[in-house]
Image 1 (cartoon, rainbow, N blue to C red):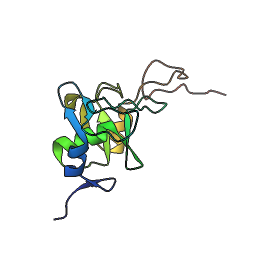
Image 2: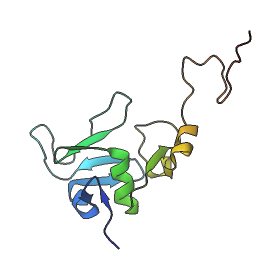
Image 3: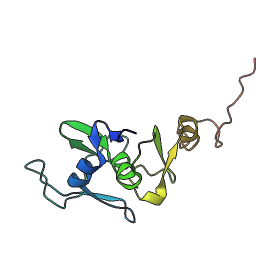
Image 4: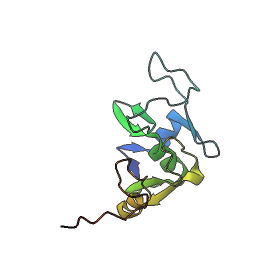
Length: 125
């Protein structure tokens, strides 16, 4: 069986770069990858949606995927944040999910015309 990889990186390599605390969800650098980053500094990069991410050898990787991979050793297709807070990367808040399961845990859009998930207004003629 071949070794699992996350975007081309092995678990051992990512462990040499990051320290993950599963109780707090904080991912810290073990090395100094750039001028502005110190050893022990938390990952700070965010997407517009609020997901934390880090650049590893020029490749952007989401922090929740790094955390899951460091802890479990495998890479699921999708990882769901149970409480909906995309910056909360505690292990108890992460779960492997199918795309369908992940979409069921989405927040209600502000543009929704009803306060209930899965319910839509029927346009009558």
